Image (cartoon, rainbow, N blue to C red; front, side, top):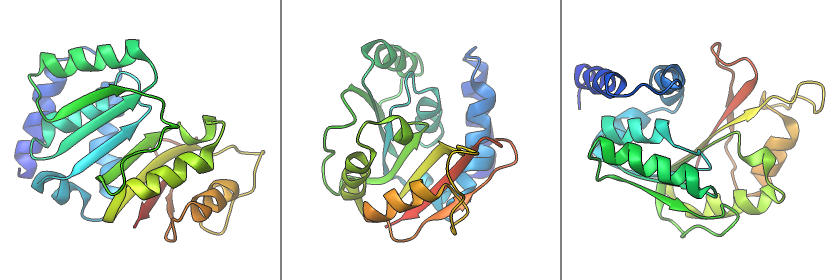
Length: 197
């Protein structure tokens, strides 16, 4: 899909929805996805994507609409949120996205995904390192883990990688050797962590 087609697809998706989170979705396409080198081209060609704990998954639905060659799975513990996500995907007639009610603490299938995303999820888990190890094992060679986590200003020290030091330590212990931390101007309260495997 070329850039013009991407813009038209996003525009069509936005016009068909009145969800108040549309600006957040726009920043995903315009600011977040470009921080992962080559990711947009890979999504255009077709990859397997897992999104963890995103609730009603508006962003995942828009990704599935924009990148029809890719396959998307969204998981959340809330049956109500997953029901809403399924209804939204059904409204657009999407067959490349599925939503599952499940505890994200459960182990994910090994080497099943090319991209795993999580937003404001890891820090809230009782056993974050267990979840991170499961995510690491679920990624294929060449895959990427992309997360957005709060900065926790004043509670933890900023690490050498530029992000939250405790988060970087946990990520390394889970098997992520290369960690790039980004700060994006539109979102001053979060760090974005990019981890290729």
